[in-house]
Length: 374
Image (cartoon, rainbow, N blue to C red):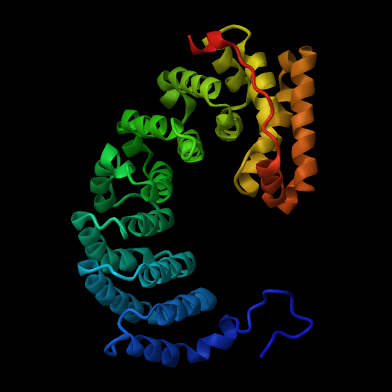
């Protein structure tokens, strides 16, 4: 039946409460179809299983063991001959939805999921099945985000993740960055021990327009996880690298403002000012006016990224007398803050409208001291 007139557009016909009494019979029937000859990789059936798990959410808890056992059997089969990308996509999305909802409701379930999923995941990574590795990294990131700390298995996995070959496939980049961000949050000591290699990944991602947003996300995770003193020896090279990249590729501006907003939120406006001035006296006003002020309205991402950029911009004006003393810099920052608020129709409404507006807008001109690179 069609949704009632009172129901909002896109409303679900069934919710978790309505679906829960039917779950056992429904899942049994759907997985039985996948055991029939000729239907082993039916994408419509796997999509139905995925949709059931997404709608049922935590109500899937009693059936997790049965589902994951069945999914592991299927995964073992398709690993030998991955021929149906659509089916495989829904297979891994089903696993991801189970991890998302069950671990959120029952953190203790993380260990059980790891015991069930690690063996087939190890097979995927050892066989280097290119179609599946992005999904494996995605689910590993979800599991690590739900943990209180690192296990031995995650500690052993970390060094191979930093090898250059891991980052050569574009499809690996988003889930790998998410996984490294989870490592920074849950295992700072391990990340700091390999921080030069992590920064090497950051540099590689920053060098390409298609991945500079992921570079900013990775660097932001380091800012959030670490004290400034722990990264102090790397701060100047990082900022120099960012400014050099901005001089050669103007469109990197939004990504830089995004990660610098996190730096500012974590360590304060004064720390950002001092870092820029330590590179070259007078550089701070030039960067805040010529880069931050012009590119802040174009920051991409969700609500959190846009909100951090707005708050950071306002704090620069309100907390740094040096900014207020420079009329052009203060005006550029205030204009940027006003543009972001106007585009977002209020930060509380999220950043979707602003991101769409930014993507359609013509990029502004950019100028910054060439001497900054030195």
